[in-house]
Length: 135
Image (tube, rainbow, N blue to C red; front, side, top):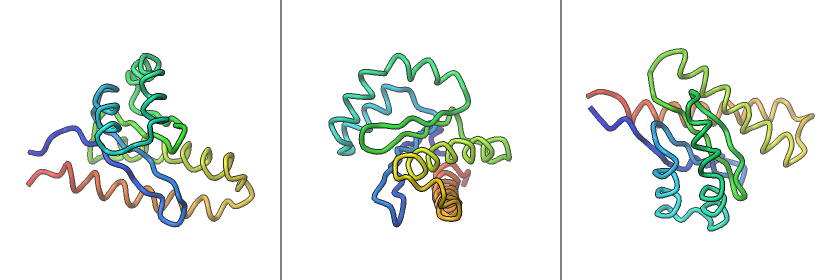
């Protein structure tokens, strides 16, 4: 069986955005990944500054957090079941609504936001399934 932890950066395709997707990790592991993966210094500084606040929300099944340059989706654990995918869709809604709807002022572009959520869900769910599948 593969490890129950995984962190990577998911690119947004046609938008110049990136999301740190992290499953089953601690805030320290996310910061360590950010430092080793070339994440911007602003993001690393933000993660360190709000480490305790982020640790507190890690008691929930997942969360979305804007970062100075990109964002973070954290999920407590991976399970190949409807509940996990419901949580992923929930957090992706926050990401798309925040990054495209609010920041890029695309609130009236509901079809573009729906396609982006579909793209991210497809890419992330495939990567997580491939990483966590039992051989």
